[in-house]
Image (cartoon, rainbow, N blue to C red):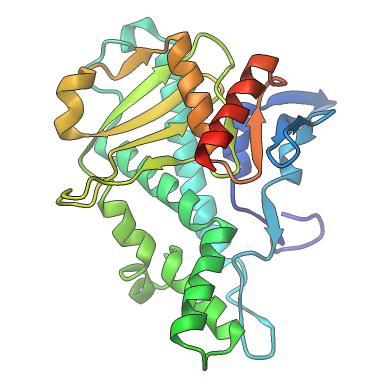
Length: 294
């Protein structure tokens, strides 16, 4: 929240709490700042220096509703909802990190409660729907179907239908994001552990394979979601569980790590983020993935 203001203006579509998991910390006195390396997919070049996570993946007043005069309505109501989701997701991710480092937990029959799974599902779905491109797609869809609406009304309608507004119960039951979370329920969760800080993420971090044509619940074929620079969350349909085993944690091979890096690169929009500068091999993998996705 900006100093001297009671409202947040820089609204992050990839949360800082998430980006911190792929960053390193610089300490100055009692103050800690998280810095991350970024790779530009347009120029295919690594940044010369790392950047503060506060300075990336945000837009001014991205989620703000406005009246006909342009004044804000219910300032930060969506931002506050996202903050609550982020706090809960941060707790779950921290718990997963701790368990992944405890040998006794590696063979536990369960590491995530139903509530933990629900939190992660809501967090991942929110990441997809809070993306500026998704919001713009909603506005453009309304422009085609409701040309008489003002641009401001289109934007408000899109935000109210796409995003969770927990302070307005009547909207809460009907938002698109609510129905989108349903199709991820009942999937099998698995955590991949990398040998070191080689897991990367992006400005569009949830990688989802579209459902099969005859999928009854319209569930995706798989989801890959980097959690930290060492951990990856997989979601599979329950019927695939017999092929992937029953272990909650699985150690990733070098080939699996490379696959994840290619998945992330193919799904990203403009930027790749990493804890360490990318190696030449990683950059070649990213280039290969982008060529295939074009």
